[in-house]
Length: 216
Image 1 (tube, helix red, strand yellow):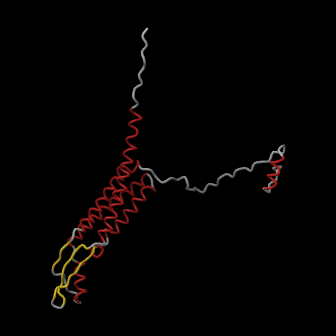
Image 2: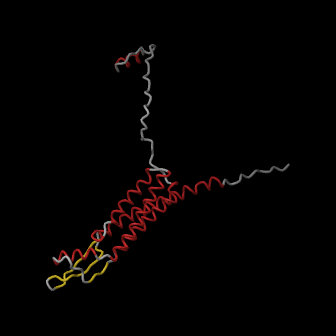
């Protein structure tokens, strides 16, 4: 008589169930990296010189320069907002997480737009020219820009990517544990153990603690 050995079929469901979790971990790591790096890059670029030029003071050329914060404070402010939104993503759930992720993406987009608009800005140098010459109508004679506005735009793109990842995969990310959150519900007190009268050592211990060993 021939015996047929049943060969178990592979469980594709178990293997496939790890796909969403793996995607969530990868997207989470990438979003954290892009968000933190993007905010740091935007903040650093805002402190650097964005434009240079000259103005005429006492018949000679006077050099001028303007930093990113002189041109516009929007990239630095939005970088801080984006970084805060990146942290807040883990403190909220469902619709709240979607809204915070959208705020993160908008912060990145706004950083990009403000940085690119700052490339052609002349007002910061014109103000410095007026201060240097003492003439409110003075303007900068020649102007050139550095690469730092574009660096700030790259930081904004990283923030935008972090926001898009949060919008797409945020539902798979973990949330802050609510184990330590208190809902105001009074917790039942544990009943004190009653000393066994048949065991004198327990009665003496109860008396030492200031308790009634009879449980009355």
